[in-house]
Length: 380
Image (cartoon, rainbow, N blue to C red; front, side):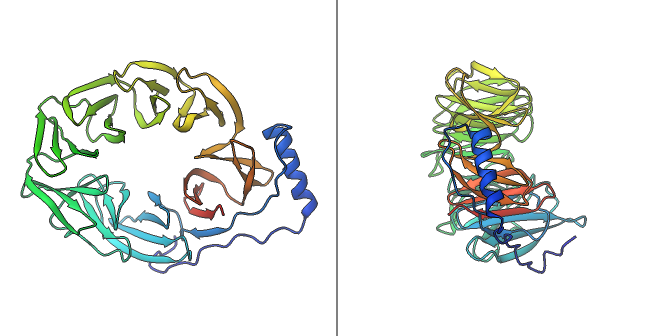
């Protein structure tokens, strides 16, 4: 194991190979067999690596300027490290006492929210220091650019504004919030016994004792002015402006929801389900697909497809690869090529990479490797 108390220098990309002819031949073959005979010829370059974790990471987050990583040890400590995408160096590192499960990381303006089942820390993105006293609040749930904080000892709920560095309001709230979502004008708080809606100014709009069929702590997704709660075996839609207007449909193990055209695409146990956002009715589904955002799905055998979200018909088979926004990462000999799937242009290679999952933010691409390390490359 690598001690994260000592900041390790990020690994550097391997120097460009002097074997020009094999590299060019690889591009031609990739263009012909993977992208089709009409794909443009592209000059392959190794994308510059700008940052990398010093070892395996647990949960991690990529933003426009920073990559945050975590690693837990057997003593109940959690390392949180912020890595600069400009220099590749660690900006700061915090060791936290942590017994709250796998942490979720969210950047809300000038703070990083580290939230678990019954513990939370609000850290300054520049220094890693606490911005909120961790002894006061046991639950933190990001709500847009703000954070909902719950004090279980005092049974109070507060809405914290990181930009102002203070609570906008605080009031009695006896139930632990499992999920919180913010729209432009409303704050929705979901507990075991029901849902409550406040204005962003703290005024109570409505509350219902109707239990949300979410099964414990649901995953919450805000798409437009609607909130979707993904529970153990159901999907629930709530319109915060009308808390009593909602629908719930049974769906096995939903994991994520994304906009796909006029539909909401939910990936989970039964594959991909495209739902009507107004009624929850099933428009189409496919047991071998996941994804759907931007009309791109991934198949069970590792191919990427461009589909028509309205009816699920395949418009174009993009071949084998891992989608990352408008990019496709695919095998190319002993390395990986990063391709713009819309036009077939090759942005570069990822030599020696074995990604198990990738995220794209602006001009950076981050992938977690098979061994757990996270590496970040520049797309410039």
